[in-house]
Length: 295
Ligand code: GRG
Image 1 (cartoon, rainbow, N blue to C red):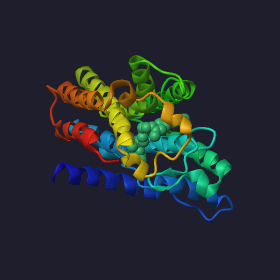
Image 2 (cartoon, rainbow, N blue to C red):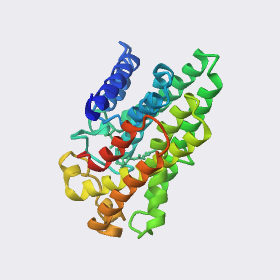
Image 3 (cartoon, rainbow, N blue to C red):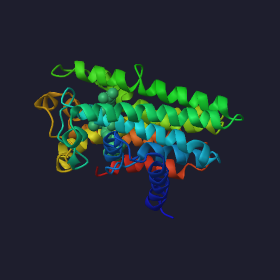
């Protein structure tokens, strides 16, 4: 299997698990579940859960043990996108080339679908903790790590910094910190939660932490480059408020050429972080994939 086939195989496992777990019951509140399913099945790359499963395989861990946590991160990621698109945030009409959740279900339902996805993520992780006495502590630690990354010292903090820095010039360091919280925290959590559940030793955990940090940064530089190249607009990501056009990005701060150089060197450093570890092929390719992706 080549890299892309392997990525697809991981992604298919994630799709199957989510399809079974997030169903639409015949109840009066059915629309809520339809709204949750709508964004959850709208064509996301599944990068975060794929990373969790890849780390699990790299460490010879148990995929079944990691899967609920991998999917919980995807549910949290999906909720964050629904809320990010709301009129009170970025006010986007399209995401992944499709109408945003609130455009289809209305603002109130979109808000509640995001809330419910976050709650479901917690439920899924706690169910996994309670299902297995043997690894309960490790799994509880993984759940804590994921919730911290998603919360007020992680993704939500990044979103607040982003909101409050709109229309103001930010420094390169401020931009890095904002993205490290807003997008990096959840990417790192997908890697480190799997490492925790699989019992990674200190040296491996440190290497994976550095790798996660660097691919998170690479992910964001690439996102900024994609926005500029217009690919993102074609895919319907950037129809939001005009305010976004004035925001500092890696491209506005560094220029396209320097941003591309930084992307290249960040990926190289991410690969270097894995030196000395075994079975790192998939993670090495993922670092390159992040830099080469078209969406
Ligand atoms: C509203 C609480 C709250 C948080 C929002 C992550 C975030 C914080 C907002 C997303 C805004 C955004 C588009 C950021 C750029 C980087 C990013 C997270 C892109 C989307 O991630 P992908 O490319 O998405 O992994 P797919 O579509 O593949 O799932």
